[in-house]
Image (tube, rainbow, N blue to C red):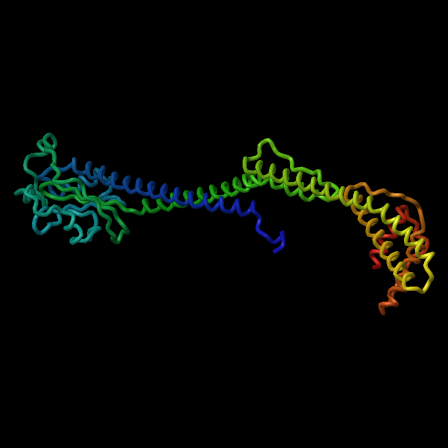
Length: 402
């Protein structure tokens, strides 16, 4: 896999940070929405309780059905019927659970459901007072009912339940006294609308938070990987002639990156020292070999002149002379290579005709190609003049032709 096709560490770090932030935001948002929804549900129960308390305070143990209607109109609204969001059902606490009053016909909840939430077998339950309810006038005149309104004792804490009806889903509260049970219902349409609005706000806030977390993660990962950019830039500048490059340490680098930079710089110090030692050894060895090789070549040439041509001794001396010349060329190449690596290559620049030199090199190449069964094709523009080291350029072209 090429370096360009690999995944970016910065991108991966930013994506992983976004994933972690997204999970945290999702958990926090879900918990926040659940708590807000729970508070909304509690608000619905409080609204039901408040309406029931107000309605309760307007009634007496001997209230008639007309009294119920007047109380419902006065407490829950000015119209002849209760508002559409409320439902009021009153059941007598007797064995038949007699329906005394309902704001809707049929009631907003079925009879079997209401019976489940009415007090069962409580010794405090009393039967219907004689002469009360079902349109009969209450005992005492209007003045008595206005001045004397006994408190209605509750048999138990309010009981809340949710029921589906023709109006939609409703939340009911059951409030029981010794004589009858008042069911006050509130439509959950507004509750669900508010819950959906809250869910939308939470989702929008979560998306914005995730986007901000992504931008922050990208910016943070860029700052975190900045020392790696310095490492890459310095490594790209390292060459055999520029081993003195070092990675600059930033004042605000983290401890791990500071340790990495220090280790890499120490490694480059060792590499530079080893390379310089090898270059010095090559240069010294090449330089030291020049004198013995020159003496050997001179001795071999003298022996060749003195030996009779065509003899076995003359052939051996010629072979030794060729090998010594080859060894001298290798030594010169090693010396040239060490000088080039150290940046101390001596250059003798001159202006000369490159075309003429290339023509002579091609003649030698044609002879070598003829021996190897190859064909040498060339096209050299005449009169190409350059300013360079003639010996080194000839060496370069000889290597290329070889």
